[in-house]
Each structure stands twice: as C-alpha cells, then as structure tokens.
Length: 272
Image (cartoon, one colour):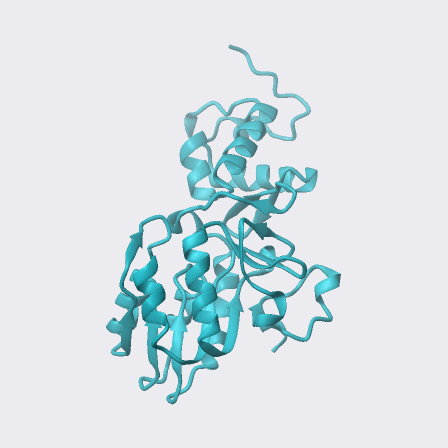
C-alpha cells in the first residue's frame, strides 16, 4: 500500500521514525479519538504502545485533535469530550499519569493543611495519594478507603485505619455496607476527596454509586471538607453526585472557566 504524505505537515524523517511506517495522518487521528472515547482517558504511553509510534508524534497529534475540539489534551495524555458527561470509570492505572504535575502541586498544598491534632479522612484516588508525599507531621491520624493510601501512610510511620468491606479493584478502593457502618463511628476534623466532575449545578460527582455513597457518608462525618481536583474536572459531570458544590472547599490549580473564578470556596494553589 502506498501512502500519500504531501501536505500533512510531516517530513520524510518523521514519517519513518524508528524504521516503522506511520499510518496516514487522518486515519491515525481517528484511531486516537476512538481510543480516548472508549476509555474516557488515555496516556501518551498507552497511545505509543497501541499505535507503535513515537512520543513526539503522539503529542503533536493530541495538539491537533485538541485544537479541533475532538479531545481534551491534558498533561500526560488526553480525556474525552462527551458533552461533559462521564459515565464510565477509568482505572487507577489509566489516571495516574494524567495531569500529574497539577496533582503534585495540589497534594503539596493539601498536606500543608494537616496538623498534629487532626483526625483525617483520606479518600482513595490519584490526586489524594499525592498528599501523602508531602506530609511532615507524624502525629495526625488517618482513616482511608484506599489500599495504596494505607500502605504509603503506614510506610511513613503514620497511624492509619482502613475501612473494612468490599475491595473495588478498578479504583483500589474499599466500598459497601460494612465500610458505611464503620464511618458512622468517626468524627473527622478534615477530609480530602477526589471527584471525576466538579459542577456548580450538579455538585461533585463520580461514576460509581457505591464509591459515591462512601464519599457522601464520610463528608457528613467531617468538619472541614476539601475536594482535590485539577482544572480539567470543572464543568464535568459524572453519573453519581455525592455532594453539593458548596459542601466543600476545592483545592485546584489555575481555574480556566470564567464562571468559576469568583467562587469563594475555590483555592487555586498556583496563586497561593
């Protein structure tokens, strides 16, 4: 098969990176869009493996698709554009590298809010896990439904309790009635939760009802509630709303949507 390469914006060297023939540009772009829409989020590394092309080509393609409005390019990969509604739940592995630098900055600031007298609920999630990296006080106590969170908190010598119940492999979180009943016993001073969607109208949302129930119950038992989420989460809506928009302070990076810029419950770490 002969591929026409003129007017595609690639020179001959780019078209034969690593000795492998790069598929026609529009065909490749269409496949990237399919992968993003099917998985809801995808990393650059995953696309490199699927398409067998270089990182520079993938990043160039994501920039093109973002400009066309077919995907949303984020740090480390891309997320889908589906009228801002997300009904599928991506795995921890899929989400770990997305917007990693933003998550690190959010985690650093959130950790600075935790002090020795605090009894903290720490939600399972790829953003909440970065809080652990920056914890300095060894006297605060933690409760979590995240398996990885438990291991990492214990490794730092911190006192940690893990909720009992059903293990949900996709998000590495504990859910179910037993976890809900255990939460009834606790009164937290502070809590930190992740969210798939942040919306003025629909509040904070997540794709799965059991995980949403844990978030709701834990927030009800907490004095000071914080949602941690990068700027791509705003105006996104997932299947299950677990709290109203005003129910928590939001720790995020630079807010890009104008209608959120005057909200008093938003803390932009890049401006603090």
